[in-house]
Picture 1 (spheres, rainbow, N blue to C red):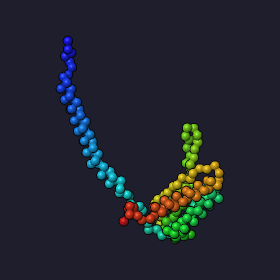
Picture 2: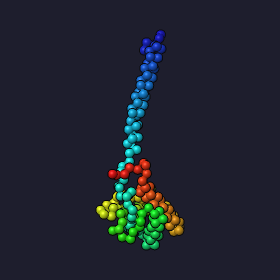
Picture 3: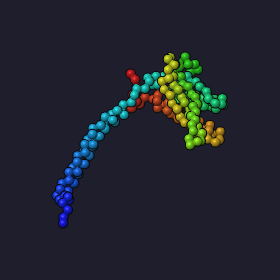
Picture 4: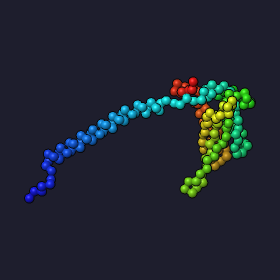
Length: 183
């Protein structure tokens, strides 16, 4: 005796064709939606927010040392930053804030935390850029200082962090075709 609840081979084939056509339709619909959204998402990402105009228009800066542990280390970082800014020749370094368009403040930030029961810490050089007229912070840049077991290695790593800060400042204060500035 033959079971009566089995479908015929034709109805099974029609069911498979129906499912395949539905999957194809849904795939087409998803691709169409994603394709229509992609240009909008790309356009949103390509428009940069305007930078504070002082970053491009400033001609002179005052360099301040906001301080951090150890006067010798603080002085070494300050001197290194001062010399790199002088060699760059983008800004005139002035001796008082009143003579400057911008004030740059260098400081050391320390982040401490606990991971899996172990205490960890990281040091960062942090450069704060202020408008001297309003005293408002208009930008800040931070660079990680690689840890080291030897003092000489740590000083070398700090010098590398200063170089990265200056490189970041160069990108930030140099007009480019992709940068958008405020009117």
